[in-house]
Image (tube, rainbow, N blue to C red; front, top):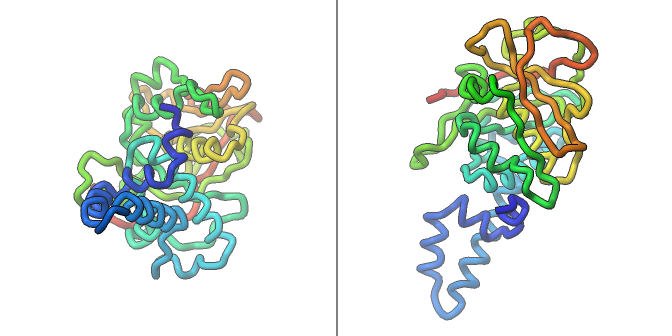
Length: 278
C-alpha cells in the first residue's frame, strides 16, 4: 500500500497506535452513534499524539524554536511510524529516559529513529512504487550482507526500551541531526569523527522519510554522508547518498580513509541518553 494512503486518515492512525483502547471505545460507546463516538475519540487521540506530549521533561522547550521543531518532527515521525507499522513513543518518553535537554543548534532537527527493523522493513517503506514521491532504497551487496551491523543502536546508552506490552517493537533513539542538503563537515575520512558523531543508518533513513512526507527534497543529492557502524571488514565504512533523478536512496561502502568535498559527516548532537536499553 502507498504510505501516503496509510497516513491520510487520522482515525486509521489512531487504530494503529491505540488498538486496545480503540476496540474498547468502539464496544462501549452507547446508542446508535457508536461509530461516531469511536471515530471522534480516535481522531482526538491522534491529534494529541501529533501535537506531542508536553510533560515536565519538555517544559523548557515550550514556546521555543526547539519546541516547534520537536512538535513538527514528531508529527512527521508519527506518519512514518504508521507506514512502517511500528509504535512511536511520545516525546516525553525520550527525555524521561535520559535524553539531554540541551539547546540544539540552529538547523538541527530531532530525529526519533527505530533500530532493528531490518532491511525488508525499510525497503517496504522506500519501495519506489508510490506516485507521491517515495524513493527506492538501493543497497550494495556488502550493505545487504552487513545490514545488521548498520541497523544497530549506535551506542549502548542511546536508546529507550520498547514500551511495555509491545514485544517485537524496535529500539528507539532521539538525536538532533543537521538537515542541510549536504553534510556540514566535508572532506573528512570516516575515522576523523568523534565517537558517537556519525548518524546511524536508521537515523538517516528516518530523517529522509520525515522529509518525504512533507514533499521536501532528499538529502545528499550530490554527495555522501558517513554512517555509524563497525563493519565485519574493518577497512570499510558505509555511506549514504541520494539520486533524486532516479528516485533512489543509495547505501554503499567505501574505504574508511576516503575524503574529499563529496563526502562528510552529519554530526549527531545533543548527546546520548543515559536511560536503559534492552
